[in-house]
Image: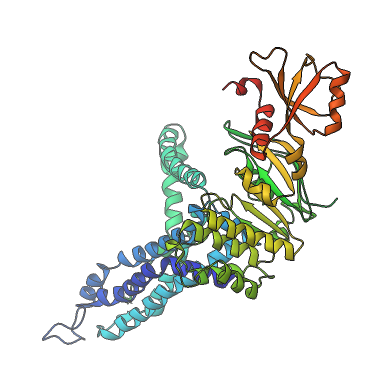
Length: 228
Length: 303
């Protein structure tokens, strides 16, 4: 059952996935472009600070690409089911959870392709630069982070896209409602309760989510290919 | 008699606009059951209900002796389903779709599938998105039949198809049934189409099952009578009066439409002081229309 799911997903997304694979391979190479030893200067004398600064310009593109791949895989995964009101899926001799798990696994398998391309690109990029003393390349760690970020984005959006439009709106509404009313409530309560004048609850929750050990840390953590 | 499909007092409501009201039907095992009704009468909703796609608000459903939705997985493995709208993947070729579909069914018969593909003139390399409506209809039937199902559920399978394709589709169904003991449940609003092939018929209207009977009974049992000196009330009649109206300018003559009619029932009129002048056969479509007309509430009759 996994095989036909993989085949169906592959047929839908193969063109876009091809572009993502190319982008994932190229991005680490583009990021290290120009980090080579400038003419007349040897690698040792190259300033480590300058190298890191130049590389950091490209850092936002790494999680962005991972998120875009996850998003595309998730939406394409359910696209056809939504178009024909899930009739085909529901007429198959599978339980709903079996169908969903197979579909999920097919998407995870496809997410491996850009991750592998990224891993190769990161290795080639790391090998192509002469690093100043004190700096090291971390292609494996970066590729693993890229894969996990893709998976997180895919899993989250897959779950949302699996439901009806009403479910998606409900989840989005609750999230934005929590943020909006949370901020207002916190400001109002700060006038009466000392705790809320010291702690902004929404901000704390946000910080916890996007930084370690929060689930979105994979996006905001260290994306450096080259580091100390 | 064993039932392939049995719905007992099934109800379902979709907002204020549509409701299935207390639907109870029995599809005898091995029969070809025609499910008639005008557009929007609840045929597809009823099918989706027993296919486990919608959950009834009340009532009980069993298919091939198993309970819905509890045993849905094993039930669906034995059902070949052709939905109202094509549900195949347009990006695939016919061959690819067949391969994908086959992988979900343990009893898939590839030899029979190849034979059907030849017979229905389907090209395995053709892309589904480039197929005509008739070709897509044939592909859907091919997928449903190649599973070797015990129950074939066809939701308006020939709607919008040209007569040649329609004949191909129906004859493939009939051939399958003649080879196996499969039950066929076929919904349509095209009455004459079901007349040829069905041995049972159920009629839906406005979310209710208004009649269910053997096709022979349906064909022969609905008559138009011209009655002289008709009584005002009809008590203990051996037939069901579907409708009556006074004929314009013909004295005391009335036209009655009755169901469950048999020739000896003429004697009933002698007892009530009336006379049957004519017994007029209705074709299936006329009978169907009269049945619907009689089942609708008074305020709807005038509309």
